Figure 1 (cartoon, rainbow, N blue to C red):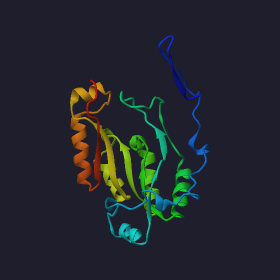
Figure 2: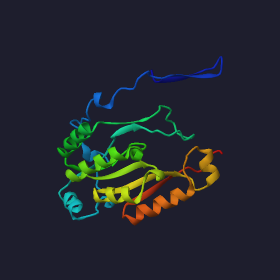
Figure 3: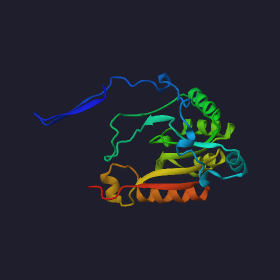
Figure 4: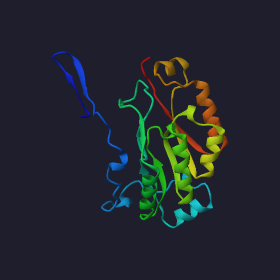
Length: 212
């Protein structure tokens, strides 16, 4: 399961999809025991330092780490490699277990690499509350502009979210339509302005030279 191949005789691409995805909670927990985190990009960058507590943790040698809370994306943008449907997150209990584990390694700063962390707002808020509880400062490496609002952004900022990276891709309406992005240039601009208004850093994912 999970293997795709091209039949050169019939010029057909075959996909052998798994009948059922494994629940994330059934997978082994992250294990940092044999990793020297200082050999990786674990330095705390300035954009994490939004308040006195963050600066205090950095001064005490706290590290940064890239982690995942879920997998997948419920959308089907035409440029994306992902063909499996849906977005799955670890359970709230498993996520709390993960946070408690990385704290043992003095990690208080995390960049969350989920492709669409904003897909489930309720789960996102639950994570944000856990992050605040454990003095975790965090970045969203994958979010959509049509998922955020002033209310949500204010909540995230109050719960230690420092950066949101949006998959904007383009500001051209025709190109966004061709990409099956299901967003508009106006939504892009509104989300960026709102994010800055709530004092959250942002960076953009842009695609240059896409056919369409």
